[in-house]
Image (spheres, rainbow, N blue to C red):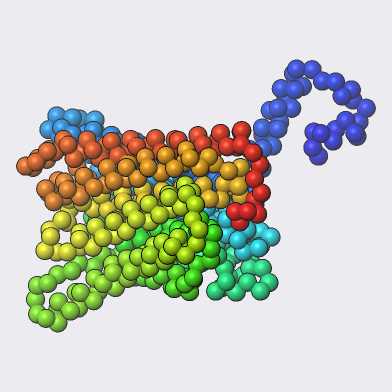
Length: 506
């Protein structure tokens, strides 16, 4: 029964006082919150993922800014003390990969894919709803454990267990969302829509979801081993000190390649719409997206192949082949998608859109990150254990964030019924690009100077230590502005923008 129906069914006077209005407003708020919590509407579930992921992006960038300030004077600055540093870095890495990159694209896919498929609803909507809450509560458990000295290397035994359980629960949530997406693409398509005819983003959602479904169970299995060992003997996996050694692969490359597959799908979707033409080589584009998923091989084997030219010729050939398989094929797939997306502009009549600018710039930043990872995995370069690896992750995560903002700009009419200001969003694209480069590239340079990873004090090297870290901190600050600015544009569009046909962007 709704409050609006009450006067029709009773003889109560319809004139109500201020207190009744307040009660009605309070009841409406409770009802609204309850509807969001229990909703099986794919758009609402998707927006819950999206909104929370953008909040995580803000918090992760703030942490990056603080780390940059701490590293400016590593001998004197003491924002973090002692064992707090590795735990805060664990939170930072978790927030970047499992707080921003993975859930953001899962949320976009949940909101957009059913509409692209012509489906009435998302397959297993309650599973997707469970996925959001599992991911959210898992992330909160990680936060609580680290606050209570329970992260990797933490001294509170019970909270270290809570950290492991939180990471596992967050992964289960992402698995649930991915299962719902993949099932929707396979079973909920409109009559006559075959897999080779589905939109490029839906194809990337299918490929990315399958890659996630293959890789995250391996991560959960690793957590089970770590949890059992930490709870009992703490002999096999090193207890709280060994968590990052055995679980760190899930927060770095090539695992992160799995989560950027949909970012390239956004570009493949937006480019033809921007050029107002059809993709002339659509099968090749879809093949390129599929090739990126070879990164799952590195994820399930929990390793990044190192290119080592030592040893016999057969050893060199073996190392080169494995390195190319794990790192070269994902890069090849990305290049195919980018080049053919640019080909659309040449063949069509393009217009300047913020969605295309963001998705293209994001894809290019991701490629720079993949190239950087290829350099990082060259044994002869000796970058292992330096902040170069952090720069790679930032290129991938912030590049993915830019692509996601492009997707949200493109599908804003579908998500909110309003279009976001194109000119202002273009300005944010430039700020986000500059922020991504500044947050990441100085760490590439500092990596060559042997600045150690996951350390903010007690190190030194020849060169402008302060300069590289100031620039990195400034880059994170610009990402904060980009996220806040985009959220502000969305709020302004919802409040003051004109209604736009949702079918136009489906």
